[in-house]
Image (cartoon, rainbow, N blue to C red; front, side, top):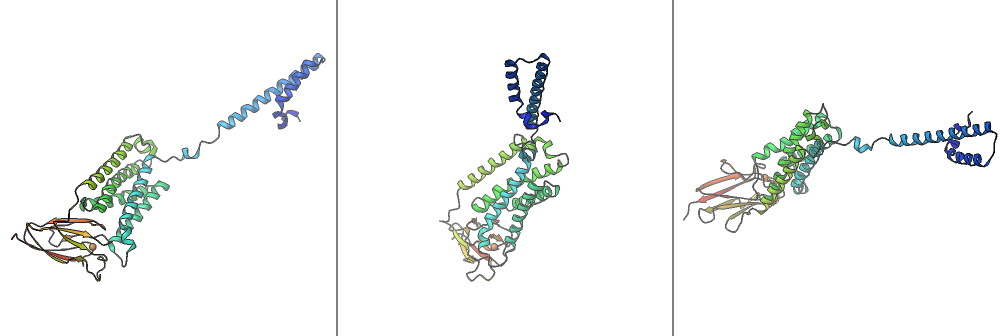
Amino acid sequence: MHPHTNPDLLINSRVNEYILVHVLSNTRLAPHLMENVRYEALLLNSLTENLGNMEETALEQKPKRPDLNRRRPFALWVITAGLLFAGLDLLYGIIPDLRNLSHFDPFIGLVGCFVILCFVSALGTFLTQRRWSFILSIIVSLGFVLPSLVVYPTPSQFTTFAIATSSIPILTLVAIFSLLSSLNLKKGLNQKKYLRSPKSIGGLLTVATLVLIMGAIAFGSFSPHVSSTDSVVVMMVPGASSPSNPSGHFSPMVITVVIGVNNTVTWVNKDYSIHTVTSNAGIFDSGLLNSGDKWSYTFSTPGTFAYHCAIHPFMTGIVIVKSSP
Ligand SMILES: [Cu+2]
């Protein structure tokens, strides 16, 4: 067995070489022995270099950082963050109802299912990146956006307004990214720059959406709220979503107003649940009023106007409008 195959000898070969050179310079040996010793020294030297090279190669070939290999495209972050935001936003809107839920409210149930779907599609997209998750994201986001556009709240219904104003653009963005991602899924999302990187038209669209939302909410919070000094106030009383609520639903249930005197009626939702003020004849509709929201309507023609809550049809009220004295 060759002595230099011993790893300890290899590691120490530089030291050996040093010793050899010194021995050579201080010792007089027969020329053929000198040659032998020189050869040993050269051999040790080249082995040491080889070992050094091997170590360097081993360092270079270490696998790349795992997070770089598994880096998710920008589109996935937008879809996931958007759906999580919308889910939390809606959850925030119904938390007072959930806390005070004494009986099953179908509207709250619907919103609750929607919140769960938001979370499922967000996590599904982020973790699996499968086609089903992108399609679910499209369905969930459009399922919120399209009906919300029909009953878009006014700034005086501030809670509902803020939820709709932030969730509608974000879920529209989610729908766009989900659609483009599912179309490019076979080729890979990283093949398209607008799906891969925030420094692209996709990133620009995302930033523009966020700026739009902040602007709209700021506008909503600064726009003049309904002053209730010169208007008649009707309350949705606490517990109004229960058909047998002892204190009723709309209070007062019947009101009389006079044109030119007090013909603006303001409804205030003092309940924890979401309600609407919807004319039986289709003349006016408040849209969804969250807990604490207000909505006003100015009556300009005399008559009797019956209304109800679109979510809880047992909630009814009447406004009697008399002509100016
Ligand atoms: Cu109601």
